Length: 303
Image 1 (cartoon, helix red, strand yellow):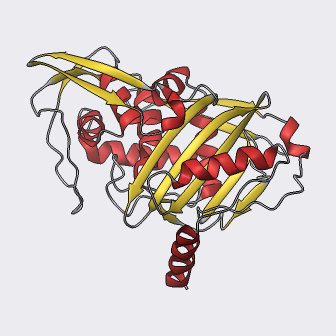
Image 2: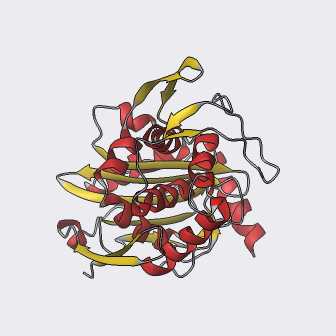
C-alpha cells in the first residue's frame, strides 16, 4: 500500500513559502477485501484508509466533476496555512458573485466576527457568507485567495482539481474522488479543522451588532454517538448532486469516504452506513430504486 505524502505550504505575507512534508497511512484496512458487493447511491466514489492513495473501493474515481461546498475544506486549509490570526475580528461582507445560486445566510452584513468563528460556521454549517468573508480578508482579496487554493492543490498533487471561488457556489470548482482523498489527508493534519468540521451544534453570540444564532452540523452523524466522525464536509449544487467527505473510525481504523453526486439530502448518509456494514463483511443493504434511477440518468447525460 502506498501512503500519501502531504505537502503543505506555509505562506507568509512577503510571498515566501516554507514546505513541510508529512507522511502517514492507516494500514490495517489495506488488506481487507470484503466478500459482499457494495451497492451505493453515490456515483463517484473513493474509499481508502486515511493517508492511502490506493482505494479499497472506487467508482468513476478519476472523473472530474463539480464538488460544491466540499470546496470549503480547501478554504480552511488555505486560511490555516496563511498564519493569519484566528482571533482577529472581520467584518462580514456581501458575496460579490453567487454564480446564480440561492445563497441565503442568517449572518448580517456588517457583523464583526472572529476568523475562527467564521471558519467554524463555514465548516460545520456550510455558511457561505462566513466563507466569503474569510476569502475577502485574505491579503489581495478573494481573487488572491482563489489563486492560493489552486496553488495549494497543485502542491498537494491534486492534478485534476481547479477552483473558481472559495465557497463552492461555482459549478466550476472541479475535482475527482481520487484527488479528494489527498485533500482529506492534508486537512486531517489540522486538529482545528477536525474539531470544527465535526462539532454537532453550536450557539454563536455576536456583539457588534448584538445577536445570537444557533448552528447545527450539516452531517447528522456528527450528533450520533454510534459514529466516531473525525472529519466531515457536505456539499450540494444541482450540478454536483449531494456530496460528502467523511473520515470515520471504524473498528479502530481511520477510513476516508469520498462520495460525490447522489440524490436526496440523506442519501450520502445511507451510503456511509452501507460502507460501514460492508467493511465489517455484513450485508450492506440495498439502494433505493429512485436513487438508482437518478444515477443512471446522470451517467447517461455524461456520455
